[in-house]
Structure formats: structure tokens, C-alpha cells
Amino acid sequence: MKTRSFTSTVFLSTEFERFAEKECKNNSPLYYQLSKQIAHDEELLRLCFFVKEGQPVPNAFLAAVHFFILQNKQVLLAQYYPSVTGQKTEAIPFDLFKTFVNRHEEEIVNLIQQRIVQTNVITRCNYLLPVFSNILSQADEPATVIDIGASAGLTLNFDQYEYYYNDEKVYGDSRVKLHCLIKGGKVPIIKPFKNPIRKIGIDQNVIDLTNADDLTWLQALIWPDQTERFLMLQEALNTPNLSEITLICGSTIADFKKAIEAVDPSEILILSATHVLYQFTDKFLLEFYNFLDAIGQNRDFYFLSAEATEAVQLKYGVNNTAVVLTTYKNKQKREMLIAETNGHGNWISLSPFLIPSEKNKVN
Image (cartoon, rainbow, N blue to C red; front, side, top):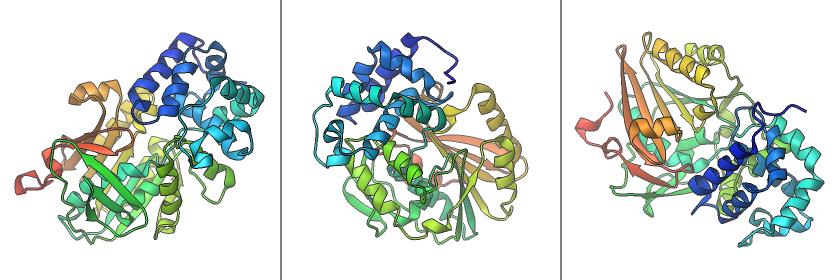
């Protein structure tokens, strides 16, 4: 079995501690508690060596365990997973967790060697919709939105959901109801847009929603005590126009180039990538940005990214996820911090861009 290039449990321990404090605290009490305990368990940390290279270890490992819980709902440990019971749980007994992992060790290893972290966090649409509507409302031309790292493509259905900011409904009529807290600013105005929109998702391992294992993996990536996300996923799978989204298997510059070059230059083109670029190697990330700059010499387009790497946080002076819009127009490039948010997009601190005025329009 192939392991990651590092062999130090110290590194992995730090990763689980960071995951607990930066991502799970105040978001997932169960994963906070589990991550803290895993960080000090040599046996489980060594098992994490098998997580596929380039993948976030805590997310992948915990999702793999969750995957087999969802496939074995009758086991004792499943009684502590709200995703199975629908009931709130204060803590998961760690000895019971370890026993389950040891019993399914070979299956877990096989899964984390093959699968990648490819969540469809639908609440990230809370910041996608305002930006997209701001861009699309300025012209009537057809548009193409290409999502890099699209998984099952559910965030591409951004215009099919119902949105509430600070409990005020601002857009949509859907069974999928997205709620977002706006910190220190006004509720964003969603500008009307009627553009015909073609939606394309690119992913190195496209989620096939007709495949039982793929669907279970998509569910397993949801944190088990965030039951509202499970309900939201089920509703999102039944939203209109989902079948009209084109999903393409690809992960290379050539794949991205092929998809972009197929878009008519007269169309509005928007690329997006939410919590995907952090999985790129430094070399590939540089190639990707150079590729975008090269495309910008041949056509106008927009690139919306949301990342929480240390480099991105330092660049934009934020402590959480930076939502950044890069505009390529007339061969000129302009970057703008749109918002600060968390990994799930359930709160947003807005820049003036999303509080529309004449001077803040994209041009």
C-alpha cells in the first residue's frame, strides 16, 4: 500500500489540532472533540499516512470513517452520529470510535487511497450568487460559468435556491433555503439577471449521483452533526435544471484550456474555484495562474476564488476564507477582495463590492 511522502506523526498531529481549532470549533463539536483526540493517538495518526497525496488529511480520514458508518447504520457507533439518528449528540466515545476504525482498517485504507475531498457545500452559494448576479446583470449576453473542482456540480445551481441574509429573504423560491449572517454590513442586493447560462463543472473525479458509493461519499464528507446540510443536500439533488449541468472529468491545464476555448468570445465567461486551489502543488498553482493571465490576453473573463491558505490570508489581510474576484478586461487584470467568510459560507463579512452603487460596479 502506498503511503504519503512524509512519515512523521508530529506533522499529522499538528494538522488535526489545526483542523479542530480553525475549522471545527464553533462549527462541529463532534469533529472538534474527535480531532483533538486523534491528534494524540499514534496508531490512528499512522493510519492517516495512507490518505491520498495532496488531500487534507483530517477531512479525508474522518469522511472515510463516516462513509462506513453510513453503510453500517446498525453498529453501536452509528448511534452517536446525528447523520444516522437525526438526534443531537454531545460526544462520540473515543474507544468505540477506535474499535470501529480497527475493525474496518483495511476498508478505510483502501478508501482514503482512492477518494479525494470534494465536498459540495451548497451554502457557499451565499457568496457566489451576489457576485454572479452583479456581473450578469450588467449585460444581456449569454454566459458560461465553469466551476473548477465541481464535484457533483450542486453549487452551479446557484440560481435555483432560496436565499436569506440576516433572516431577510432576498432571492428565490425553492425547497433549498440558504441562510447567511452578514457581519458588519448591509444585506447584499441581488441584481436581476436574465442571461441564458450554460454551466460546466470540471473535476478530476466527477461525482456520479447515480452511483451508490459516489453518493454515499458525498454524504460522508458532510460533518455528521451538521444535519441541516444533509437535508439541504437531499433537496438540492431534486432541484430543477440539475441535469442540464455539464460535468467533465479533468484536472490539467489542457483540460481547463479545452473547456474555456469552447466558449464563444462574445459570451460572458466566469470561472470559479472554491476551496480547490489549496490542493494544487506550488508548481501547478503557478502554472494555473500563468494560464489565467494568458487567457486574459485573448478574451475578457472573471475568475472568482475562495481560499483559506496562509498565503491567501496574508495577502488579503483576513483570518478566514478570502473571496477574491479577478477581472480580466481589455488585457488588464484587476484583483478585488469581495468578502471574508468561513469554510461553509454561513457568515460573510462583505466588501463594498456586494453593496451595489454606481462606483462599485464591475467594469
